[in-house]
Image (cartoon, rainbow, N blue to C red; front, top):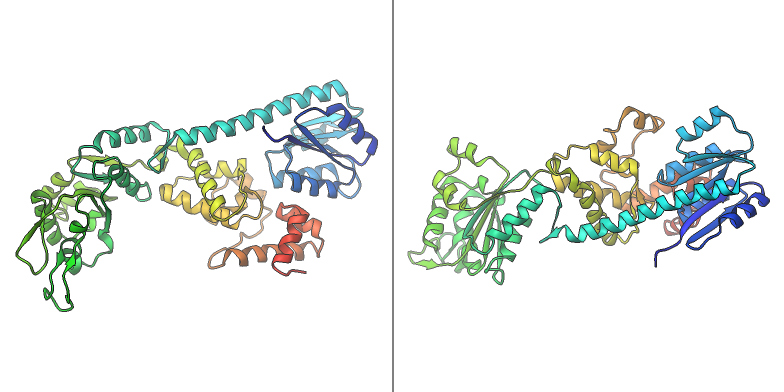
Length: 458
């Protein structure tokens, strides 16, 4: 059963709140009321409602001030302003600041119920959309990869066709696009799935050690060779050897690799006896192999041997329709990893991510969302939780809404230190007023007090 939709009504007149509660009471709707705007904000931060009914004229805080703080907390909340003093200017300002509607008192109960049914219907549709996103995410998984774009469907189909038959394969594509996941998928769906999946990062191996790393050596082959050592080819016997960043492999090793692939045998350094191996080889590179061949940095005959099957991983910019799925998948993962209840991204944060060009592809998205989940205090990732480089890409209007305050620098600071600093800064700016500090941080007052106790803040 779905949880109730939550509505918070804030009005300094108790009679108005009683009337609203009685008129709107229905199954599946939980109504919370407050005659005090500050307590009402605490209710909003604590209950995180989908709808807010808000009186425009109240003591302490005006309805427009409360509206601004609600929108700052979560712009997805539908806010309806109510007033007995209607003016066109005020109505325009309320809508401009994020209100969903503007009603005049005395409020027509039939009109209010009609408007509320429309908002409740919208909330149910959004919930259903989230359910469908979850279902779609499950149907869009393939061997650890996420995608529903035509480019990814084509890649998944090619992997399925190739996996049972390949002996060697080359995976190309920009950095951060998941070439290692494609390699693992080929292995997992191949007859060699029960064997080892062995990885060699060619860019991390010293040139003089390449041969011994791949083919092994015998005792006494060189100074320090005190015993026989099996190479990666032999260790991968019956399985798959993944040569990551093969474009960085020195040419002297390329020739020996070619012989090993052609003959399916290796000779350990210092030995004259070849050893038979049965290994499937997958190579990957983010470099243009044809350019490397033209520059005499990569052997053409090795390319034709390795690239009997060639697969290319698409850049994230070429499959932007997969971005929402990837965001949900990564937020779910980091939420569990950091033991934080992260519900999702605000609309404005989604817009910022959608406008970014993602030169680092999925790996960059993973880094951005992981950092945002770690640093976020609330349960929604907002623009302020994103990296400074992304925040700087906002439009002039969005940047202007930041009031010119400098962006915080999280570099070199642990999660606990960062969170404690944010809490202390908010308390100082609020002159010790806990309700005000909680509103600044977009969290409930109870959560603020819990964190104050955690970090021994007074």
